[in-house]
Image (cartoon, rainbow, N blue to C red):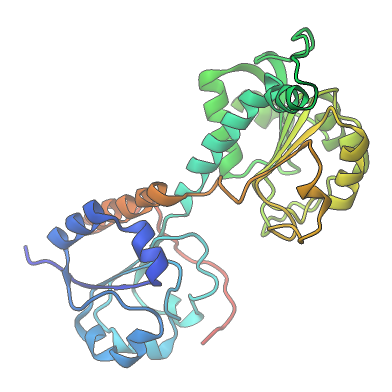
Length: 333
């Protein structure tokens, strides 16, 4: 069977991260690439290459899929997007074509959930609190008050894909009680999935560790406020890997100033990174990380591998795991 003709259209930074040597070698075995990788700008000067293209591999820096671009690639069958949201480059014109599009959005939850699980375990052992106390006093506190990871409470605010995978990992490796707050969940949902659905107030009041999973584009409208942080049990930890906009950051800082027993592990803030003179840089009970929970370095090759697997499914006529059938978008072109 002849190989489909294809092209990479992706910014150079993303190309180098997503497609390592092994992934490129596998793709070259399957696809006849018509030219070297292009960016959304450079392809405008080489539109002639698109005439025979059947598959496009893209990612951050994708071209605008408007009438002009799509008319230049009449043989395009599948667009492989090695990233998540398509709203910035897919137009209404695309949905009028018989072209499949698949994304790696389903993979986002993997590194996030692994990162959160690690922090949950450390938090339940009071690792963050005991470590900073040891530095300040050159001594170790007694371990009598450490929660530990047995029958203690872990709270999840929001139940997106990453929270679901955190739940799966927790159930595999820990014996703790999971509390979840999400307006779309019922008590019956919780019973089926093995957690307790509670109010936001009860979740903060009862959870020894709270992990926030509210995305910027969520329909879940709530604010984590001063009283929520104030109500947390002694030595509790708040983890955020999702969105800073759902947190009243100034109120959180106010509580952290006097509740030195609390710890805030913030992988995302609002803005991110914090402004230069933010108290988040100075407070000893804040653990700041630069959005490490998402895919970094070699972890990005997982996306490239997924795109290869999607290509194989496409060539066999099988359903695509990450296919987007239709997504409301603004008319960009």
